[in-house]
Length: 249
Image: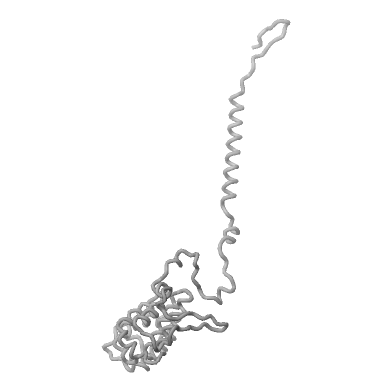
């Protein structure tokens, strides 16, 4: 109600609207904070195109160049057994890059080298998956077995060499298996029938790969060469899975 004042002027008490103003201001602050947080989330979360841009895209030259050692990769800094031996000079050869093909340059002629433990170390390198170790191991193994007097130096190493080849043949990587298969044929060509007594440890891995269409032709050809170099294998050398292989029956 108005209060009567002097001179006939009526006065109304002020209406306190502080609560409504406070509610509107707090609501406005809440909306601003919510919009700001959404903007921050939008800025921090990359879009699909930004995510694709951040991922390293394959280059056309990657199909021509094999996988190499990345010195900035943490896993690459931990050398394998073969890489450690090679870095310490345990493999007396080095890779020579050519315009057409790569070659190995030996510190000494392979015929003058001791096969123990060089041939074992090269066989271990067959399980490598990165360049240059893949080339050095398979080419070094091949050239060492091609040297004069290789058979006499290799025969005493068969009990230690066969388990290493077995691990390469049982490897999940297809290229490692191919290198192990080629090395097995090369070894058979050098030692001949002396390898027959160890075939029972190796052929089980070949029988598994032969059931795959990808390796059926390669394994069959390898088995034929093993029979050619080593002669007929007696039935006592076979394990049950190998009965599926017709090359030795």
